[in-house]
Length: 340
Ligand SMILES: Nc1ncnc2c1ncn2[C@@H]1O[C@H](COP(=O)(O)OP(=O)(O)OP(=O)(O)O)[C@@H](O)[C@H]1O
Ligand SMILES: [Mg+2]
Image (tube, rainbow, N blue to C red):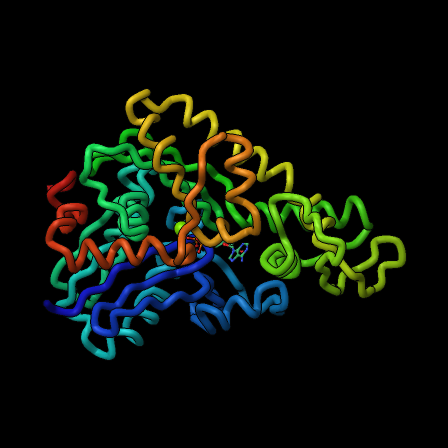
């Protein structure tokens, strides 16, 4: 097989499967620009500049709510990462890109155009519905006549889908993800403790000590952070406990569970039977919040299967589309679909 790449341009992370190395690379989907259009840094190093850069450096996120918000910067960064990965073998390779289902055809075409409107000519470019890729990445056989419910809890979005016989029976892209939990922590700390903190600090709190249920243990985890005291205006150190983080995010997580419940109510009964039997599949970077699976089960009364590789399930699925002939049909060409 020629060189092949599976790509998921997420709101927070750009993930690429490379069939040469049979490995996944994941970098922050962030770019920093100087003088209007000169790339200064990308990926993790651009992210490290976020909330720290002077005015002359513009740090931005080219994907917003799952769709391309800044085509040129996304394309620049994507090809930087790909060319580094491909080591000069990008030309003539096969590419499959995961796209959310619940977006417009024009928004989907923008993903396709990343390659179609590039100087580097690949051999083929296909799109694949992201939730199908996610289900494949979980190791499921989506071609069976069995209902599968997948929840991909990402950075800016949560995509909830019901799959059967290789098709999507239901799918909804909620404009809610880990970024909104970070914002909720920032707001909570300001309102409750008069402490202004950055989004990056909030994100660290969430990832290190955040949980979806109150922690019962007496030796509660905590983290010392630095923020600005609203009253004195000065920076201060403050220990933040797991309970405080939980208080900040609990309402948003409960709302998410309720949204899933509403979607469950729309599932046809025979498929619902399958979902109850096999459980809901939960993945995406944000699904790693502690005890989230237990909260889901409490709200929906259905068991939850957590993913082993939650951060890169989608590109692991794209690997199957690229390498297993049984699933190659899930990659489709945009050209033949609407614009021929
Ligand atoms: N251990 C963790 N606990 C809680 N959240 C985490 C953890 N690790 C990563 N995350 C969160 O996962 C999110 C990124 O997940 P993911 O890579 O699936 O998003 P994405 O695919 O880039 O976004 P989207 O699918 O919305 O476009 C971030 O908000 C990050 O803070
Ligand atoms: Mg994602």
